[in-house]
Length: 552
Ligand SMILES: [Ca+2]
Ligand SMILES: [Ca+2]
Image (cartoon, rainbow, N blue to C red; front, top):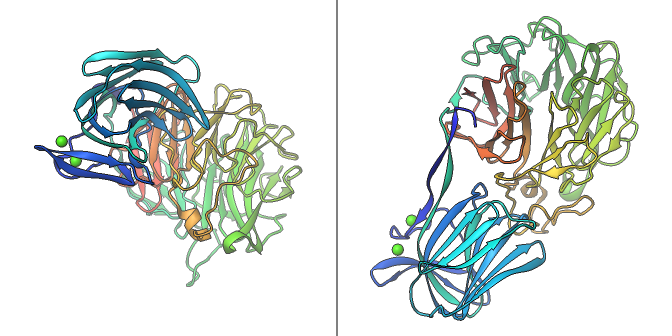
């Protein structure tokens, strides 16, 4: 654990309902607060619709949950480590005993049963203590069940209570204690444009005070003082857009890994690749060979290690067609230059068909023949011939909506992929042969009436309810991992940004994640960038500008 984070045992959640509200709960059915004797309690009455009170907190791992309950009819169901898709444990509280179950996907596993009286119409104290795979359940102070879950244990998640039809129960005095990760360093807002679409932030690899932020319409912005002040740097960028033709539609920016004086930018909704050879002070147009005009958006660049003449750029192309709910149908294209941008040619073999809007491109840190491209609908592609041909590498991915990629600079077969559709983060340690979800502590959300995370599989479409318009569907609060960066000085430390829930850190190579949002006034993070010395992290937000986190 780095010094700017520390673990602290404390109260994670507490609710006695005395203020008449149930903060942090999502309620369904006949779940409401009522007075009972001298106190206020949560009442759950199952009718045709079951009554549910949920606390969806995915970052809880080991915790002790204490609760008072009283069952008046039927059974009370108590769920713990509730996580989308990952499964959940479930305790049935019946008049004749307790039954411990586990639910993963469609499967229910019976883990154990305690036979004994749990009288109705009386208050009881329940305690569930979770430590790794160890589960202990206490009723009125005595341990009734002890189970060690060695097989597919559920590792993380909040808690939830439910009463099915015919059941009625009261709950009160919920206290959850466990390990809190306390963030000592806080995000600080810097200057800079507020940030719209295409909000890239990049730090000079040798001088972390020098950085760039792009957006449409302000173009390229450069800071020489670590983000305090910014100056527009668009000299030579001829692209203009907007109703008054004064917007500078820059969508992406990349600093050459070999030579930080070389900087690439690309435009949105128009043909425009510009190159700087003086550290972003002036620009020249370098888009010969690109065949599109208004229908192209450049989504990113990467430069071959050791050879600044070899550059790949990923483009989104509007086909002019309209698809589902009138949304534009876009496709993707990769262009490659072998002469520092004098000419570009299409490098698309294997990518020609269908809808392959490319969201990110990453060249291997040491082997210029290997690169990865992430697509919005078709997963991840890999090239081993420098970008001339591509193959899909989606084995293990839960969603084919991929928003970000990061290659571990030291263990170069390790790649992280940030997914949309609430599918979280996936990692490969073998160059993409197999991907595994690494979402321990990542909060994943999507609307409950759509399929939940973990149930989305390649080739299986998400449910798109007819009553939603296309715009609604795409503006729903899916969690989308838009950016992943790896600390170059210690590649076990990884940062990920969700466009809806903010920033996470992992200090164990993705095995577990912790939210680090203290000081961020918005959770809508578009891009992260880390300095070469691993000491400063920047987050470019959508709408509230650039934030800086100093790490120690
Ligand atoms: Ca109470
Ligand atoms: Ca309350």
